[in-house]
Image 1 (cartoon, rainbow, N blue to C red):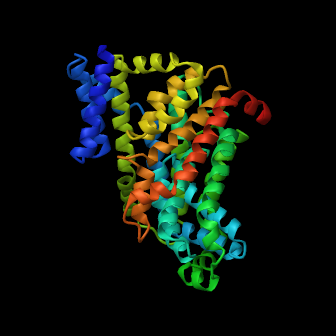
Image 2: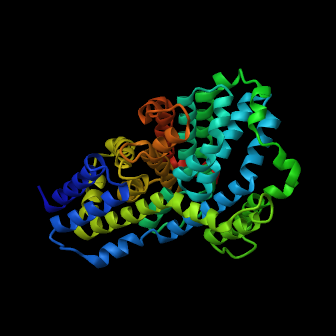
Image 3: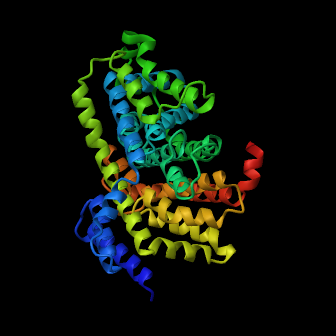
Length: 424
């Protein structure tokens, strides 16, 4: 047994012990496993590498923090409540369309932050009471929210696993929009209809209406939606038509949040910012821990060992290995799975279209947020849904949609060249 394999096993063992036995936060367990890996490999206590590792995803951390500030502002201003009320009022006679629009609301925070946790805690927590009132059972509601969180994380404009994989092979995050739309939205639509359509067909709008805040739209009018509209316009002008310089996602979020201070209900700015940072700290901590974990794996040669093992697999086993190992490694975090396994598997599939391959692998990596012990999307979905006591029941209810995610992602990986040709 070589040193790299021993080091890897030590790191995984310490991480699992920290999460399962000591019940430590995932970020702390990742830090401890990094220290253990460095010691096991004979590298001592390399402070420089620990610090460099924690700053590996600083750009992503800034995006998450600024996006969460934006979410808290439009939530406090009433924009999200007004949007939910508008959607249900307009589409309550069309159950399928109603569920699809509700799923989009759940996904929206994840789409702009790249975090399934943001989608679940923001859009999911707002829509959970509405879905329950519509007649959907609590476990199915939690499952819809969890799947919405996963698909929000995958959908454009921000997909952190794809960014992480691309960063590992020097591929810029350009040209991913259409592949990610084709990956995320069909699965999201299938998931919400599969889990909720049968129940919502019996919805009584008169029962749901009292739970909606319909006064906001009449009180503030169209201006309450201006922060969301400004964000969409800025993204389009900088990333699609490119008529103005790209100022960066954090600036776009903060400018849009600043506008939100004047378009709806009065907001206590300091409270909103503090709550945003507090909500996003667990995800930012995980990213810092994953960065340290990956840095030590690279220093000790473990990452190279994993790459060589992946590249050495027979071709017929590569796809199966990717479909199984990437979600399972997501127990560390979906971001860690994207970095540790997504990069070598992308290199193994270089005979296809790189962008479509990365997009497909990012969809598969999103399943990591349903894998214990972290299971960010599943556990938080259970917490924000009244009447759900066990995350396990949510995982079981999500079995079919998760299988669809795995198969759909593999299709894009296997046929990446053909799909790239079809979408230009």
